[in-house]
Amino acid sequence: MSPVDTLQASARRLKLLALDVDGVLTDGRIYYSDRGEELKSFNIKDGLGIKLLQRDGIEVAIITGRNSPVVQRRADELGITEIVQGREDKLSALRELCAARGIDPADCAYMGDDLPDLAAVSAAGIGFAPADAVPALRAAADHTCTLPGGAGAVREACEFLLSARGSLDSLLGTYA
Image (tube, rainbow, N blue to C red):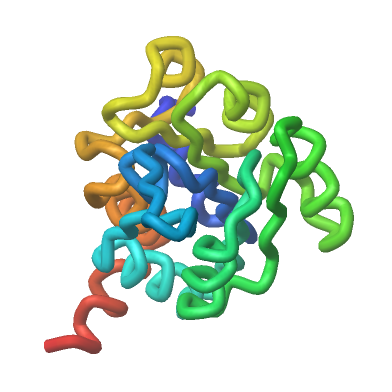
């Protein structure tokens, strides 16, 4: 089986996409207001990609090493119910998510951008990296997006998965 065929087969079995936040759903920068509030910038196009995956029956989860009310708010807006915050060991968090749902890690995808994500990217059935991920993570990923984190990489990964599953055209057609 060719690498493309293997990715397509993995995409068809996919049950879960887990995402890191800083450097994946955001550009990795953190802003603080004068009152000490943490601010992050999310890409609206990534949000629609997540919604499309959910419409195709794929659950989306967030696994992040930091704790942030802003992340909870964005997850709530997107209907993401599984948010794991404050976990540096992303692989253990991913395995726990999969075990709680009876999902084999081979039937999930993970997108991360830096060294704390490396083991989870390697363990997932499909590992994704944004274009600006660290070199070691890009080397471990099954697919490196052409766009950087916070600038549409998540949307690109979502559309890649939907295309491999044969669902993309029909989902996009609902907007025509």
